Amino acid sequence: MKAVAEAVAPRPLMPVEEALAQLLALADSAPIPDREQVRLAEAEGRVLAEDLIAGLDLPPWPNSAMDGYALCLADWQGEPLSVSQRIFAGHAPEALAPGTCARIFTGAPLPAGADCVEMQENVDVLADGRVRFLHPLRSEQNVRPQGQETRVGEQVLAAGTRLGPIELGLAATLGHGRLPVVRRARVAVLSTGDELVEPGQPLGPGQIYNSNRRLLVSWLQRMGCEVVDAGILADDLELTRQCLAGLGDVDLILSTGGVSVGEADYLGMALREAGQLALWKLAIKPGKPLTFGHFRGVPVIGLPGNPASTLVTFGLLARPYLLRRLGVRKVAPLRFEVPAGFDWPKAGSRREYLRARIQDGAVHIYKNQSSGVLRSAAWADGVVEVREGTTPKVGDRVPFIPFSELLD
Ligand code: AMP
Ligand code: MG
Image (cartoon, rainbow, N blue to C red; front, side):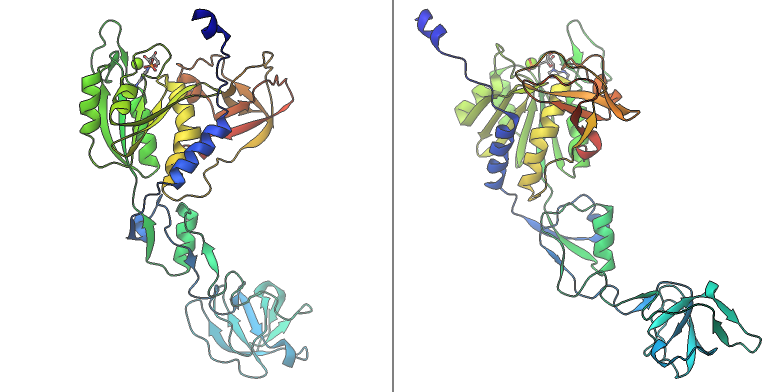
C-alpha cells in the first residue's frame, strides 16, 4: 500500500488564474439578483444595475468657453461692434442683434446667430463702448458645441459599473437624482481558531489577537457590503455546525483559518455534511489552501488564517468573486510594470505576492515576507507579483498591484 501511495505523483498546485476563473464562473452562475433605486447621495460604492443612457445632450446648448464677446463671424467685416446684451451663466439670451456683439461669460448660452467668441483679453473697449477685435477670428472659436460631450441616447455608464465620485458626478451632469443599483451583498465573517482573542481583552498563554476579523470586516464595509460579524469560532465541529446554521440570510460566508495542512478542518467537515466542498491547493504565496463550498446553498469561501495570506487571497480571489456576484464586470485590479529594486534568486513553485513599496522609481520588498507578518503590508504600497519559476533581478520589470486598487 505504502509503495503505491508513494508512486502517485502529488497533484500539481492550481494556478492563480485557474482559481480565479473558477471563482468568477461560480459568481456568474449566482448573481445577486435584487435591485433597488437609491438617491444619488446614497449611491457611493454601489454597483449600477442598468446601463445609464443620456437623456439629454451635454452640453444641452452651445455655450461660451471663455469670458469675452460673442459675435456672428459670417456677418462681420472687421469693424468695432457695439454690445447689445450681457449674458451670464444661467440666463437665457436673446437672439444676437445684427451688427452687434454680446458680452458673454464662461458657461453662458451662446445667443442665436452667434458663431464665435473672442476672449476679453484680446479686445479693446473703445471710449464709446464699442468693442474692437485685435486678432483674426475663427468660426466656432471658444464655443462648446451642443452635444460635444454626450448625445441623447448614448450609453454613458454600463451596468456593472461601481459608482465612485467620478461616476456619480457624471450621473449628476445628466440630471439623475436616483440610480438603479444592485442590493448590497450580505457577507458573514467568521474567524476560526482556539487561539484567538479579541483586541481589548487580556492575552492568555498561547493566545493571539484576532486580526483577520478587523481586516476583513472593515475591508468589506469599504466595498459596500453588509457584514454579519460572527466573531470567533472555536475549533469544534458541533460549534461550527451551530455557527453556520445561525448565520441567517447571507450571500457569502467568509471564514479564515482552519484550512492548514494537517489541521482538523471543522469547517470542511461541516460543509461536507450539509453541502458541498472543494479544497484547493493554490500555487500562491502567501496563501495556498483555499476552501470553496456551500452550506445549505450559501457559498462559503475559507481563506487561510495567516493575516498576510488572508489579505492576499481575499484581495486577489475572494474580492473579485464577490464583486462579480454583484455584477461588476471589471474585477481585475490595475497592475503595471515597475523596475525591481530587489533580487529574487530562488525560483518558486507558487506565485509570490511580495509586499512592496515604490521608491525612487523602483519597487522594494519588505524584509520579512512571512505569511504571518501583517506589518509587511502596512509598510507596503501594494504587492509585486513574482511568477512561478522566475528569478527577477534588480532592474527587471515586475508587475505591481497597488493596494489602492484592492481596498475598496
Ligand atoms: P490555521 O489555518 O487555522 O492553521 O491558521 C494559520 C495561522 O494563522 C496560525 O498561526 C493561526 O494562529 C493564524 N491565524 C488564524 N486565524 C487568525 C486570525 N483571525 N487572526 C490572526 N491570526 C490568525
Ligand atoms: Mg486554526
